[in-house]
Length: 192
Image 1 (cartoon, rainbow, N blue to C red):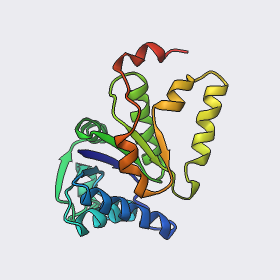
Image 2: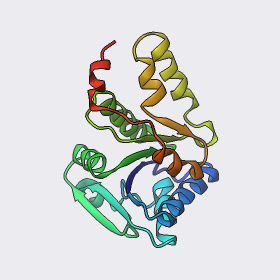
Image 3: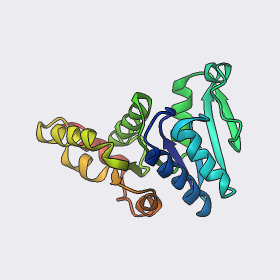
Image 4: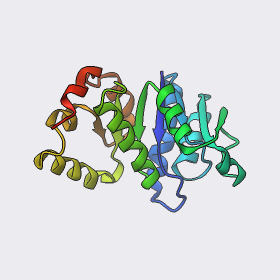
């Protein structure tokens, strides 16, 4: 199995976020799960990579050329794939992954998470999506999604079954394995 992990590159966040990112990396490696990520060497990306590598696991970074030119790539990654654009990066990660996990992050992480949720809602993929809600980080987003349902901008099935939410890294892998099955035919339910 290969999972995509979306997470922050900020190096100024609460230590608990780093701990959960590193722990998720360790758990993936211990379970024989390969990781795909944005190839950043700092923040939660760096912690995730350290966790995977500390247990001898495989982690592949996917990064655009302009970020490599800035020196933002992580030489500790097992493999680095350099692409031309951010769009190529996101598409390649989503295509190669068997599941997606969102850790806390900034607007880039939110954008990646919302894009794969949109694609799943439209039946463009059927892969499990897990939100690691460390320290309640995603509580406001989850309330916003609840409001979308209440205001009829999203169907209840999308809020209830399209993704799962956990609070600890130890819950992620089992949640992926037990995620509700999703059909590409769901696109018939996409319209409100």
